[in-house]
Image 1 (tube, rainbow, N blue to C red):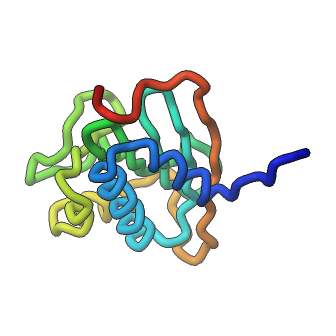
Image 2: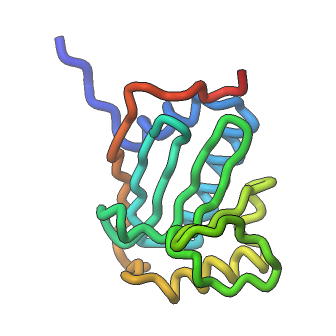
Length: 154
């Protein structure tokens, strides 16, 4: 007897359910806010060893993603995957690599604050390949690691 395949939305909900309720709530709300802010994005889900990551980009190619929401056992971060060159007058962006910067979200409402919204807008303008706001939103489960760190603090 074969089991019915879960929808990507149901799979993502299952991944989030592994986290502490407070962390999962921030993640769900952050995802909802980013979806509203970036219509037409393709969401690419990786349930990796260290974290659950949901990338937002113009299509299914991970290399073109502009943002991601990463869920860790104790916090949620907003990653700017092409963010190294962004102007950040409020000094919110963390990291010093050649491409990526991130912000640890204190609450989902951080997405929508004037400073973070300005960074999102700048990242969208600077993106190597833009997101078409008229495109239909897609949710793709790309990878689920067999071995994972605990999703709740130990």
